[in-house]
Length: 265
Image (tube, rainbow, N blue to C red):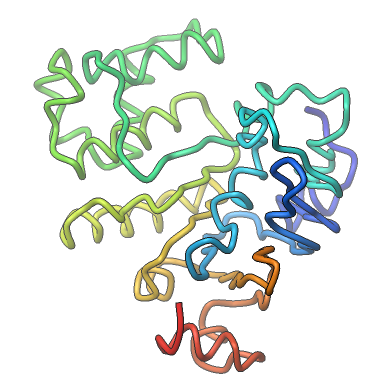
């Protein structure tokens, strides 16, 4: 995916959503999204249940395309290219924009093969696989815990370890961006903090976008926050977007303040 916009491809923004509308059949799920996502930062998407947070997240790598009735209008510019152009291969998009889901989903394979399988299948990696596995597990802060049991099933790990294994698996195909849909919601507080600490390390090399229901997590872990709500027709829309410290201390919109303070949602 060659890029054409210097500011997007090399500069401040990795994504630019322009007049983005997301549909399931005739239902408008999310409307009129305009937002720029900063490179090498963590952006949190927050909002009440049903406002389209995950739909927005999955629109950034066309994961929603797997749902037959889904379609989108508008643009998502990634590194200078509109990923919704007719000649863009969604599979190639997902190679550059990885995804980590809410529930850890290791393959029913060894820890080693969880990392190696994707690299072989997706990127046709032909280098030293041992080195790639080790590097990916180190990036995910998991190497020291599993280096002596790489032939053990990934399903035998704890929930927090499984989620870090899934992160390592995503990193092994060398994406530019990592999308995370509530990556710590199924984890205990200690495992959650490990994931949050890991995100701070990963943003040095990657752009990260997370969906979270946890206001404390958004405040702790993210650099930017996008707050979505829904209108009377249940269409999600972007209420406010900006630096997390400002959104959580001096939001521009009363609705944002009410949500963050727990008055609704």
